Image 1 (cartoon, helix red, strand yellow):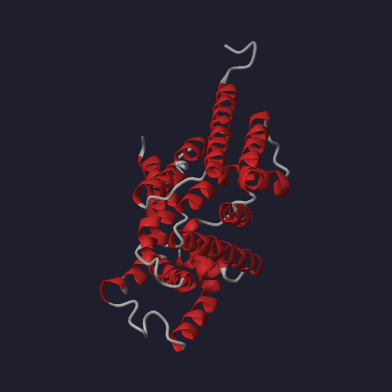
Image 2 (cartoon, rainbow, N blue to C red):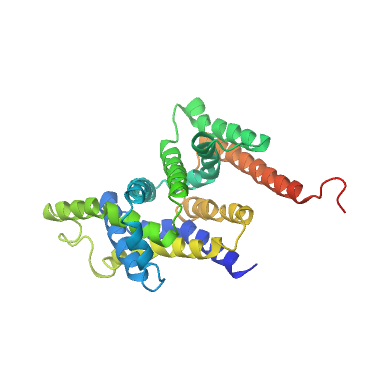
Length: 298
């Protein structure tokens, strides 16, 4: 395993363990934590841009109306995704987050088909169909629908599609995304504190207050590791490693925090795992077939 692959794997490990971090702030208003995450993510990414020799590229990108529009959309989408994740952890629904990132690759396939007219293989169609049946299972069995998981996974899939259109390095896009939505975040923090927010009332003090700037580091590090490693890591390997993230989230929810799976949720996970296995097997078969020599070749 080369350094790039190790870097990508490390990014997924950090993303998978993030629920542990957010659990430390579970009693604080989720919107407030989200706003602080945006602010401190911007501070960290802005501070590191010069060290990464990307400040000039970021300045040039900010002059493009097209990129500013795309990055603002990305900022709104990733903020929504972060907000759902933070809320799920605070509400004791980490399993919903795990499910979201298990189905995310399959949702990304569907978004690619709809937005970019990407062709789907038979295995991908089967995977999407089985995953859809899994997501619908709670509604059929218990009259419920896993809205949080679907919204979290779908927002990230659409976010990925917009980033694909923008096509700029991760460190620059992270800076621009947070920069463009930070006025909203700052406004929320100011209004919250004026009305007796977590800091002014002492709910956040001492070591817990340090968790707010640490949120910026916790957000930026996985993005940095992923951006650094993906350039020398095949998408096939990255696609397999990606399942480290929801697996660790599943461990956090079921083992660390004792969340229980309902029968309907169990059916959902089983069907999504089957869909994931078919998706990975189909991808492996397609890559292997592409490497086979044509007839007549030595």
